[in-house]
Length: 307
Image (cartoon, rainbow, N blue to C red; front, side):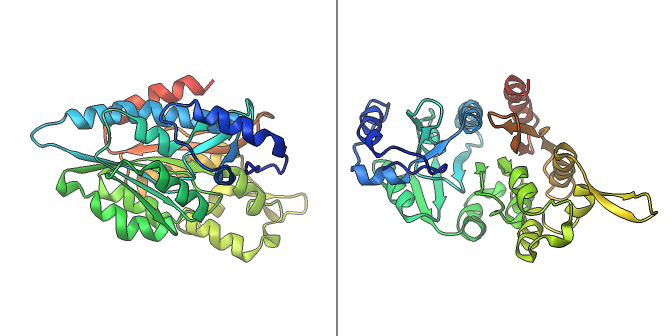
């Protein structure tokens, strides 16, 4: 059965989905039970995957062509998933970010795919079985990135990395973002999950928010300064000052400033809203880099989807 994030899926579709999957480029035969690792994604996620591919192509071409010194460029996927998704729109299998990265030519010198889910990790290992330069790591990416991956992408060693941080909700630690910026060797594509923030933290009555969710928000943002971005002091009819929630874009722009001022990325894109079928913003996509040419490339890509 195909994993269905909406909880609606007909078991009878499994065989047709597997048949469709076998017709994809770089196909691999897999037992039907492994289809359990395939998540359904909406159109906004398909757009995100298009953006990843459109940037990764010139990124790899430019760095692979560099000589004297020669750069060792790597791809890092911190919430990698299984490598394949099911389109909620067409019901067809589509390539996930790991498969997209592996298909990019010229190839990256190394790949690091991280996930906590055992079934997805098993599928990733099958995906890279003939790619010795690719590594699959199971566990919390917040610790794995800092201890095992980022130390292998040091600026002084002429190493550069493209890092996708696409968390499941508020499961990302600011330390990862800040380290990526201060390393000077990382280009970062980041999911800023504003819908999850609204659902769990940015309430009209902030006193009612679960302390555990406040802690998760502090961890993602890096401190409690998000409160100033999310709420503006406003006096009511009785002269009492209440915090009124700001709009999503105001909050995203405050985070953009934080990426520049605290994480020390030289260039940070305008936040690109990723909207669902009802035009509600699910998350913002950020791109952050130290290189002007990288910023120019992503700016042109984002323009296509900013209408």
